[in-house]
Image 1 (cartoon, rainbow, N blue to C red):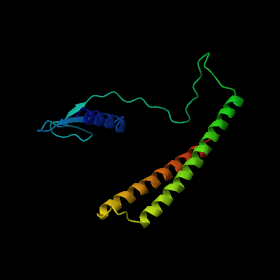
Image 2 (tube, helix red, strand yellow; image 1 turned 180 degrees about the vertical axis):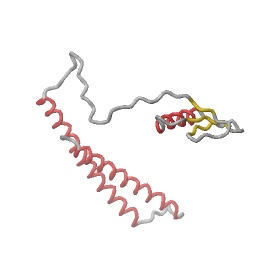
Image 3 (cartoon, rainbow, N blue to C red; image 1 turned 120 degrees about the vertical axis):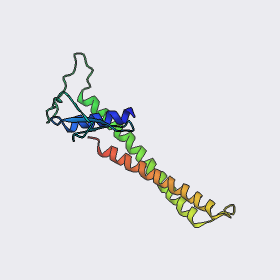
Image 4 (spheres, helix red, strand yellow; image 1 turned 90 degrees about the vertical axis):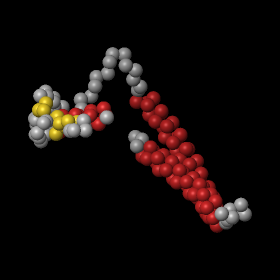
Length: 149
């Protein structure tokens, strides 16, 4: 209930920096904030919101003694990171191919213990889940590599 109250107040304040806000409590005790006056509502006397200028944020000055890394060292670190991500991507792609192969083989056969068709469907769904997991991992690694300088 407190969360709903805070959201309502925050929304009302943010949407109406210059509008009049009214607080209304109904017969069930529910509190409503609105910009439309109604019988029994009390007008709230609120301070206007301060505005934040839009535009490019200013770069924060680093405090004295803040540790920095020279460009050559950072470049070496980035190269190591890229190599690690590329290695992980190649392993994940290999696992994806194995999972796809296992799915294809798993869909083609029905095991003797799967007299109930639902058991077959559950096993195949697990194989599909493995393929999906590896696909998502490959996509995430490719995205990470694309974001490197």
